[in-house]
Image (cartoon, rainbow, N blue to C red; front, side):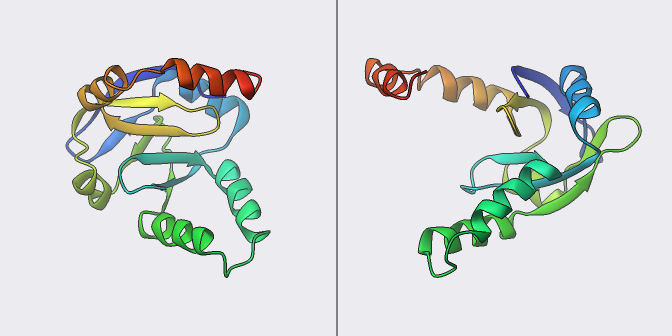
Length: 146
């Protein structure tokens, strides 16, 4: 399970050094294979391959005529890229993704349970601080038993 947020840097070749806490979880629960994508065209998501394959299985169980499924498949294919972590715990983020999502310098690697997100550190902080949970959000979470 990926928890927390860690700041790291993308080097000049676009290599991201996996934060130590996340690297330990990857070594314990996954292998070095990942699927990099975006479901909304705004945020880069990094899935251990076995987690992405679980998403694919759920999608396969849906009718391909479902427009929401088709849209999701289109966007995740557009931004989809298989990656492998090297022996030094680095992932090379493709130039296409670095350019589209403005990834350079200090980035936040954000644990989202079964996946990671990668965003510019300052933008992530600003986004979270300007969109804190409301009383209505806490009511909804309470209805979900959380």
